[in-house]
Length: 201
Ligand code: GAR
Image 1 (tube, helix red, strand yellow):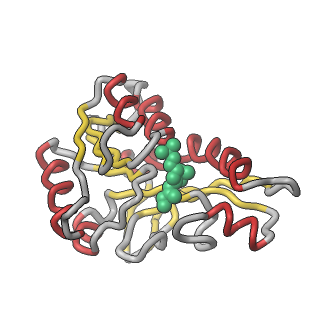
Image 2 (spheres, protein in one colour; image 1 turned 60 degrees about the vertical axis):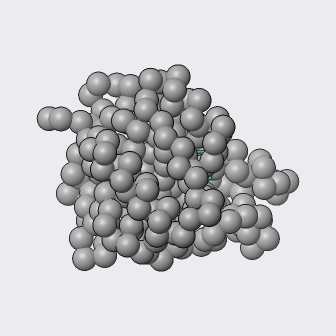
Image 3 (cartoon, helix red, strand yellow; image 1 turned 180 degrees about the vertical axis):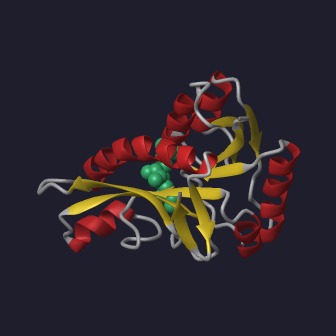
């Protein structure tokens, strides 16, 4: 079976990208990372991609409407014959049209147990709420922000002396574990977006 050609969209250090690159280094992994796109120049994630010999592109959102920015991303994905897309610390909101076009082939990772704590400053939100557990979620991307059907989650305890940084580090370890698992499920056709739900084979 051919491995699913996959792009990863980033905006920063790319530790989740690295987890996906590492998983895909195994020739038996059902997806291969063929393109990394960043909306910000000079971020460390781009360096990680280059070190792994993966093609990179910088597509700046500056001065572009959301639709024009997304059209450029879409064109780069099509030019590279990409089938699946993973958002990994990609800090732009995609247009409804993009989300609809890539529906079922587009995953995001979010550092909370969705539907709790959408948006930004997620760990601050969790500590403020006083929850005893937090975690991370890989979900299909739909037009509504941080709201798509859930593919994988992992739970971590919130400790009494946690700061946003210590909680983020504990959650991030789990992100690196579940994102490759979720991509594997999608690439193998073991999870599908059907009727607005994640359906598992
Ligand atoms: C990760 O914690 C990811 O879940 C989060 O940004 C971090 C990126 O780290 N994403 C979001 O908050 C998306 N709304 P990384 O660049 O090291 O993968």
